[in-house]
Length: 301
Image (cartoon, rainbow, N blue to C red):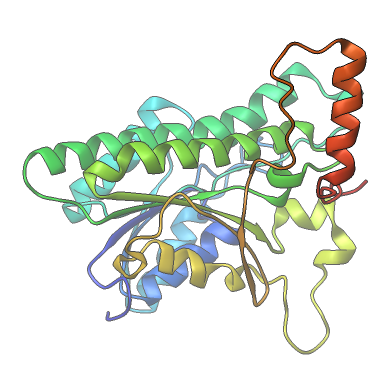
């Protein structure tokens, strides 16, 4: 198949449903050979007897594309390593990694359990770090062997990670961590020919349908702004060789809208040249806040 990703090998985590499925199908439609990862769990992370990854592979093959299923847990080192190994063993290479897997356990902070915290950070944040780490080791070895990669990593953050979201303290913390991980990886891996970016999508998935049912409902007619497939074109472009020179960026994307997000930058500042008293520090802080840009509100506030 021809397209913007012809001959590239792409691994997509959490690709059995929702955004991941849309990404896998879109990459295949643009000529990529796709490793479709999905552990096959429910919305809360509980085991699911089905095999959604196999279903997506069947869809891709029926359309004339190439794909293979991977059912490992990418939040474990062994599972993440086997994802990369599956790509290399099956197709001889890996060009793009899309980190997308995740689930929700939403609760207000006073009701959030330690297990809820640990599991969401494990799947979202550790589930980004481990595949990234193993892919990076592969590409570093390729670069050192003189086979310079044209490699891409696309991470999945969220507006919750950029602004916060009421009732989603664990999810917001994990998604904010993914932004930090993206920035560090972009800086560290550039020498090996790897570009790393992140998207913060808004789309209808199993997670968002439960949390924001009204906003995510499909319209009776016209453009379906919340369809997951609206996010995939940007992800596919970021995962292609055509995105050369774009790295360390975060894009918010929803429907037909794409926004480059601009992170923490120095705002108003004051330097006394000496240590302040607490009262003086407070007076200075209030003066600076009066001159600072008002932050966007937390989602759900």
